[in-house]
Length: 334
Image 1: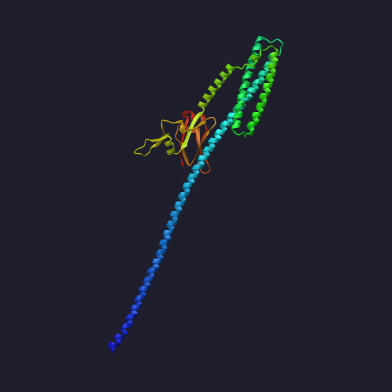
Image 2 (image 1 turned 90 degrees about the vertical axis):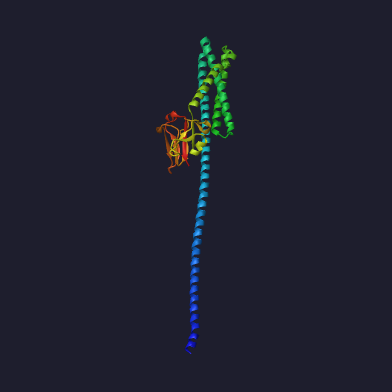
């Protein structure tokens, strides 16, 4: 009987143990699933973070590339604007020089008129004074012709500008009015001289030989001055200057310690030409720069802006700066 009862209770214990095992198994599986979910969340978070980081890097790289591109464009536009301003200043200087020449000629004409009036005031004019009057008239004729040509040049410049430069237009009108007055006065003076038996042909002759001599002399002086004041500069990275055939690297050991030096040939086409009497500053606009060409250290300085960026190379002593070489090469780092 005891054996039968024992055999009857064993299945219950067995079922209980099975239930406990299944519950334990389920708990383990649940824990495993929970751990898997947690790991999945962590892995997903890490992947998302990596993706966001990569996207940030890519976005920054694109922004940096566009920023550099825009900066280069702005620098190019700035250089172009500087060249245009320099060209405009050159034209304005030419106008001023022409104005001065015309006004000087008008002053000489006035002076010659007075001399002619004095020398021809007597009823009887000596041979010497007669010859002097004729020479003065010839000089006046030459100066009047020069002024006509110069005013024609100014009118051509005004037309080229579209007639929008009011100050130039006003100045030309004033000079034309002065010229008209000169011509009328000289015409009256010639009439008075004819009455005193001066030959009309002699009075209307220009000092052609003198004019030609003066023109050639002025041209020679102008050419010599132009050549004396002519200089060249180039600004760029080592790569840019090397591409232009201006820089090379020499010295060092097995590729190390090499220094940048100028090449033997310096083609003018690789430089910007300037007049050293008009331009004492070279635009740099870079975080660092160095002068490769040889110039006295006390003849220039680099000017920095508030952000410590090198804005320009200021030539403090042009005569000394350009004494050794008329070619300035500035290497920059962008």
